[in-house]
Image (tube, rainbow, N blue to C red; front, side):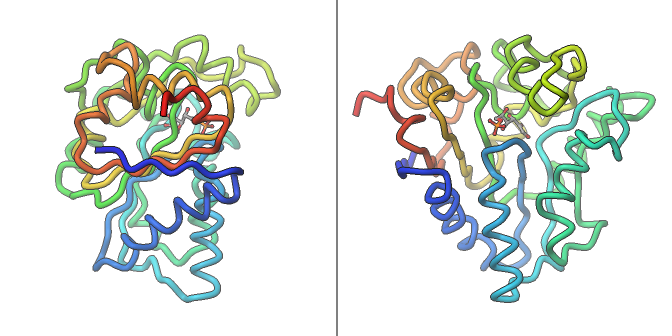
Length: 243
Ligand code: F6R
């Protein structure tokens, strides 16, 4: 079930998304599923502001990130581990041991997938933050990924590599070609999904997610089967919707 809100700009989208996040933060010891990328940065800024101004504490909160590049060290400036610390964790009071980001730099990435999934199934994620790729991916589940996939390795599509080259000196050849990602089945276990999408380049993917057929060709379309998906869009991302 989708609950869709359309706002006129990114700041309003972020503030709206934060309302949903705040309800979860008020629960006892919530478990947060987090995403990287441009879409949730404004939400994370709202969370930091709320922590600083209202004292909302993250001491008892666990977080699980969706994904991580394979083949770059944890402390690489473009690793998702680094991104999450810069954009959120370094600015709130979350203990480091409560933070979970998939390990993409280990010697046995397959084993690291199994270990991450094993940790995930021990916890109920109360809210999973998601962005959407221009090809309809969620986390790094590219088109064609089976709906029943657990945490797994993924070869990135050229479109995703090109989209992410902006973080690698605009040079697609510098973008890692593989990632470790929560699977679609892992994501669907979350009690609530918070999907944030802005910009005209997301309009086709958003339409596919909300109005298209449920197909592995648009991985986000699996969310049609989830009971509680809050979708916050800007007008550009919503521009191809029929209603
Ligand atoms: C990030 C992730 C990706 C992004 C998606 C959109 O952890 O899993 O699926 O959410 O690629 O990226 P942005 O928000 O940068 O447009």
